[in-house]
Length: 493
View 1 (tube, rainbow, N blue to C red):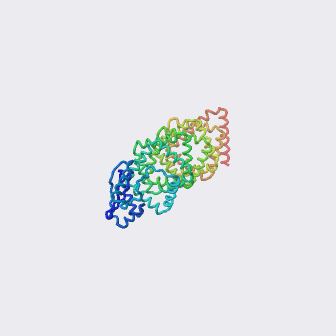
View 2 (view 1 turned 30 degrees about the horizontal axis):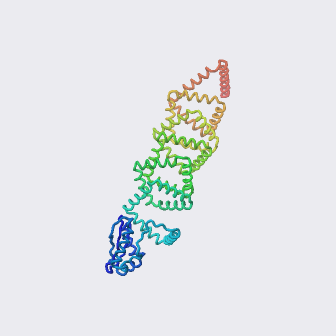
View 3 (view 1 turned 90 degrees about the horizontal axis):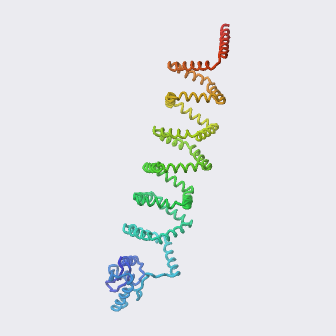
């Protein structure tokens, strides 16, 4: 950028225009543009341009000087040319050189200029033309670099930064301005091209470790106080609290989730974030705090129940859970977690209470019974279940523990009565009895099973006999003998 004095000379007539500028090259380009568009402020020069044509004019810098001496040299050149050739050989309107550098306009002048600019800016053509010209001028690498350097230099000044932040905050508090800005940003970033460009920019910026650390630290610092977090929460609710915003966000997330690459990247990021001990502990504390609130718990339960009513969601969830628990490692991990949880008496009592409460609901009971029947009617599951039961029964101490538990439960009159009633009901139909008979016959055909059953019955009889006093044994024997005699007499006649 070179400051100095320049002339515009008419080759044919010899007349000249003398001027000064802090950037001679840019000023001369401006003169050419205005003359070519018939918008030059010097009507004498503009008329000569039309009369003689652009080829008859030469643009040249004649003196290079500091900007604080521009007026001095410009006036000296005007005076020199006037003395030598006369005033009529100059295109200049004024005999005195002057500059607008440092000139402060009064309120009236400012109002007039503002009104003139508003009239111009109200024209759609003018606005489109200015926008196109600015975009063209600003989209060159050189212009972008220069603009970036200027803003960095300005923003490095603490006073400028404070002033700009205060101005931006003041404007942001205006609901009309905020709504207008959000709408403009949404429209600008709503196109696939804009999103792709923004994504590429952010990826490139995020690859820089320094930028990443700086951004994270700035975010943490910005949300470090309760007031800042509350303010951010309020702002996010305002932005995303409308049904339109939620629908838009949902659509965007679904669109991203359908992209396998984006899904894999998001899943990996989530796993990486939540698989650290600190993240797990933090998430656990948040979940416990939320779950302790009855309203939050009820809201979550209602939301999940509503989701579960959707067959598609239910099928997808079941499929996902089966996949998650399909590996031996996942099952072993789940088993360890459940065993650890079940060792807590409070948790056990809580789960028992919940199960009992659920079981009192006829609809829930019918649903579980239906699901169990459906599962048990699957031959593969049945065979697998039998194998698992046999393997479990052969574990050391399992039989004794199961037997002790069954005996302890059988001693409860209420449980015994309920079990007998249930078994009678289950075996009350001819189909059930026939099915039971077939099962028993099939089992009795197995020599090993028959021997085992015989041994079990002998042991049971011996235990019962040992526990019965001799006198009571004699009464039982006499009763059996009488019963046998009566049956024999009936058969005989």
